Image 1 (cartoon, one colour):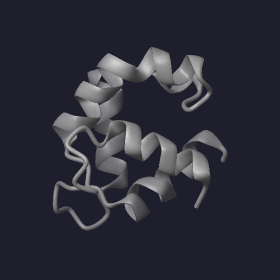
Image 2 (spheres, helix red, strand yellow):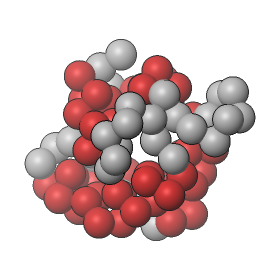
Image 3 (cartoon, rainbow, N blue to C red):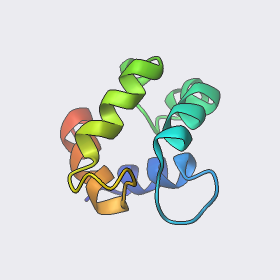
Image 4 (cartoon, rainbow, N blue to C red):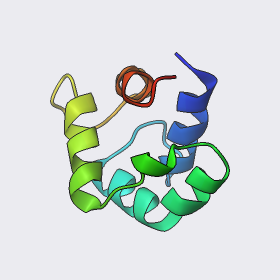
Length: 83
């Protein structure tokens, strides 16, 4: 798993509890997405709207518990963003 995935995960983990909820992903990408892209943490084309954020979350939530662990998140973003 890439270091970039860890940096992005930590930036999206608004309550810093080590997991991501759908609300955190949507809110964090809405608020921080352009800045994260400008700093190279996220590809510019990876900054989408709420629907794209929800689709990313759903793709990553392998066990269906509506929480993303770092491992679940990293598998999807590493593949999707080519890290």
